[in-house]
Length: 386
View 1 (tube, rainbow, N blue to C red):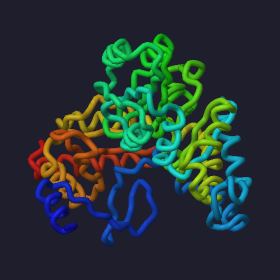
View 2: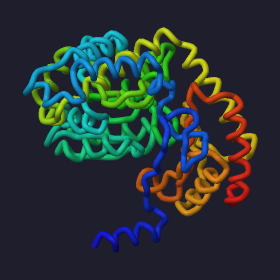
View 3: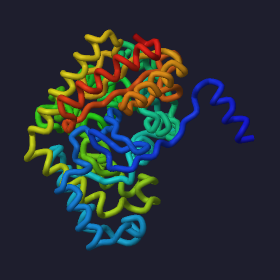
C-alpha cells in the first residue's frame, strides 16, 4: 500500500527525501564531503550558532537536564521557561507570554481556545499548514479568503449571521511568498465587525519592525493587535514557540490549551538559548542591518539575471518556476553548482507555482552571495529556467 502511494507521489515529482549534512547550519554547510552555500535556512540572524546562544543552552542543559520530564502542569516549571517568557513579554511589550514546544502545536492549541463550534473562521488562502489544521480542528465553520484581500474578508463578514463569534486568521509574514498580510486593514475590519484577529508572526519576529519585534511593529499596530503567536526556531535560532499577550489570555491558555497541557515542556536548553538570542539580537543590531543589506544585494542580483521573483519584502526570495518537475531540476542543478536551495512544491504551494525558496541571512558574505549568483545563472540556463 505504501509503495503504491509513494509511486503516485513520484509520478507527479512530489517525493521528498531527507538531506544529510555533516556540519552545523550556517551560511555554508558540508554536504557529501563538499562545501555548499546554504540559501534555505530560516536562521535569519545567524543566532543558532552564536557563542552566547550555544553557551546558554549548554549551561541550562548541564544544570536542568536534557529534557523537562513532563508537562509543566504535572512536574512543575523550570527557571529557563519562566525566564524566557518574561524576556519575550518585555521584548514584545505585552503583559505575559507562554512557551509551546513548537509553532505547529501553538497554533493547534490557541485557535481552538479562541473559537469553537458555532463560530466562524476566516483564514488567508496562503496561511501556514499549522493554521489551517488549527482552524479545522476547532470545530468552527471555516472559510478561506483570497490572499491578502481585505475586501474579500469584509464581504465574508457582511454575509455572516449578526453576532456570530468570528476569528480572522493570518500569517504576518508569509513563509512561501515573503510578502506581508495587510494587518492595518484586517485589524480595522476586526474592530468594525466585532471579530478577533489572530496573527502568526513566526517569520516576522526578529526580522520585521524597527527593533525586530515583528510584523505588528512594522505596521505600528501593537496597541491594536493585543496578542499574537511566534516561533523560537527561526530568527531566534532555537526551537519552540510562544504566545504573547494579556495576562488573562495566558492564564486561559494554561488552563485550556490541550497541546500545552498534554505535551512535555520544551527542553530547558532550548528555552535558555532563545532567551539568550533575544538578548544578542537587541545588543547586536548590526545583524539586522547586514540581513537587509544582503537581502537587497541578492534580490537585485537575481532580478538582473532575469529570474521571476514574488513581490517579497523580506529575506524570503522565492523564484517562481512552474511545475514541480522543473523546480526539482533547477534545485538539482543548483546543488551541482554548490548552492543548497530546495524546490518547494505542492501541497506546500498551489499547483503551477512550484519554486526555489531562497533565504539570505545576516551571516552570508558578499563574496558568498556573488558566488551564489553565478551558480544561479549557470543552473538556471542548464535547467531551462533562464
